[in-house]
Image 1: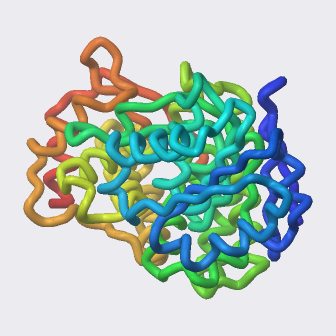
Image 2: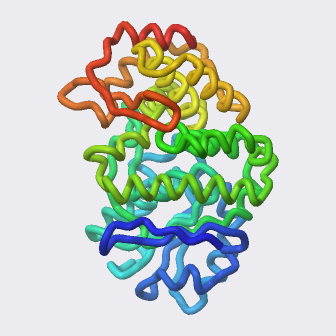
Length: 358
């Protein structure tokens, strides 16, 4: 087992990465205060792992809830369902929520924990690669609105993250590839050596070789933890973690959260960000080619979905949370391993980039 720390003073917490962690009762219960535990999952992950998690919680008053699976259910209605269940079971302030699932479950459970009685503890047990390397770490919690992704949320850190790599054995290939998009992101934004390693080891990751997967998760989490420790609430450098996300969220919103997976949209968004960086004269065209080749090798999209115009995407991008005073803010690249935060980019150049991949 590898143990990392997200260093945030009194809100610091461990990230455990390894095989067989869902069989370690002490690992989970060591981070539970009080006697009430509420495990929240979805109807895809719950049947696989809910009973195993509940079996670790003997001696606690436990309840569970399974929401429908999918990004389209990351809504205020689902949030209200969680809150209603907590209230109906007379859940107290010293209770602990457990998020058992991918990024959607982690985000919505964390948001419920942030809001219920003004904040209670929660633990992340991420079951997708994307959640293990990105969304479970850092304390961003949210639900979507029909006009924009993650527009309703709060910063609320978990008390622990338990990433059992064995659960990735049951992950669909498409979901695995979607998670790899976020892994590639860390190489692009701040870790050129990791990017080079991914080029050499992408086949091993796709084949789910344990050593390669564990290393990819560990290095990704180390990068995420370092950035979050420096800028917890995204007032500055943490924004680089959103490479590709402004474009990607626009794609997801345009598809009404029923098309591409989040990681697929982010992968395409990273290509668009790199292309725009080349058009601005900041990134060498050869670096764009290397980024696109790695994303393609991971089996991720390298062209925009049909039926979405550049104008549609620009309209959704205008609602991005990083924008300031109406100005579009983008995360771009000066080289592989070095992301920058820029605003005031000419819309004509953005349209050129979008049109080139339509």
